[in-house]
Length: 317
Ligand code: FAQ
Image (cartoon, rainbow, N blue to C red; front, side):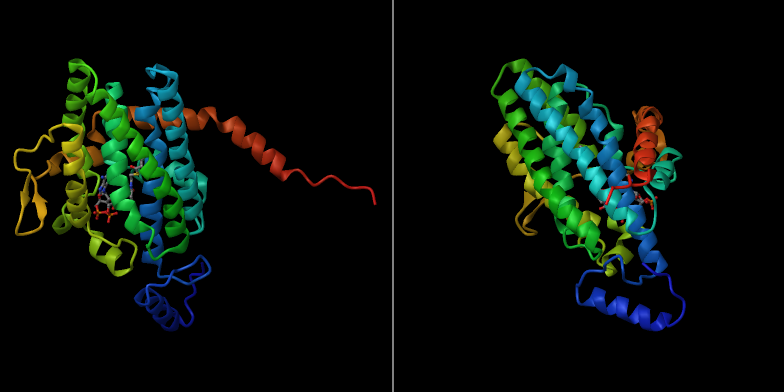
């Protein structure tokens, strides 16, 4: 990706034509610096979310209620690690290194999704995270398969296939618990009550307060606005909640015949802003854990780097 200054008007015109044709921008293409910076910001935040997102559910692997549940959860959490790696790879094509990205996460310059700053307090939360959090991720990510930057869009295609499996395993776990004892049903409802509003916040601030949406839509990085995706998620989730037999904790939630969509209440935007600022229930814990495992893994990176740097052995003719 070249940051040429000569013939910049021609290069800019070629870039804008590609965007207008809905074609893909590839790493070899010239792009405006702001397009590159916006992509690095969004893809890095997405990659960090996948990696930090392993923590809330990961804590339950050793306490899964059966061998089957443990195998499913282990595979799911490993998938999230893989998603992080695809996304770091896509981000590296924009001229940043993995080490720089991790550094920016650990020193707070880059963020990760607010949702992972809430704790997973019961095994029902494993199901709720799959159903609501992966469900919200799918709503957000399916349109990103058509994002204007090729490596990001191709990573999203693979990720979305796995996220839809994750959502189903969460739904299946909750459906099993809802068919169980009164105590299990109460656990599911309590978990849904805690996760509903934070799940709605995953889509970002309302469009009117979103500084990046208009430009990201114009560049084809985002294909839908935050509010459009939030509405799609609510419309998709309400019938699923009915099928499960859980109540969504929003007294304003109702079908609006005229709009052909559900009306719903306003999330607490001050809470979202506080969580993004680092004041959520688990922000400090999540970053401390990430820093510890990054430091503990230093010897693995050194060993892998040393092997890669070794000259190839001479082969006798
Ligand atoms: N959390 O102007 P906008 C997953 C920030 S993956 C934290 O609207 P934009 C899989 C935003 O960055 C979940 N920060 O920004 C999984 C910006 O701040 P900045 C992650 C947020 O970029 C499941 C500022 O607020 N998915 O769950 C949040 O146009 C289960 C202004 O906002 C993605 O990242 C938030 N919720 O739209 C893993 C999808 N919302 O950067 C494990 C890709 C906003 O200027 C277990 N990302 N901010 O300092 C996107 O689609 C967009 O980046 C949005 C935000 C929609 C998140």
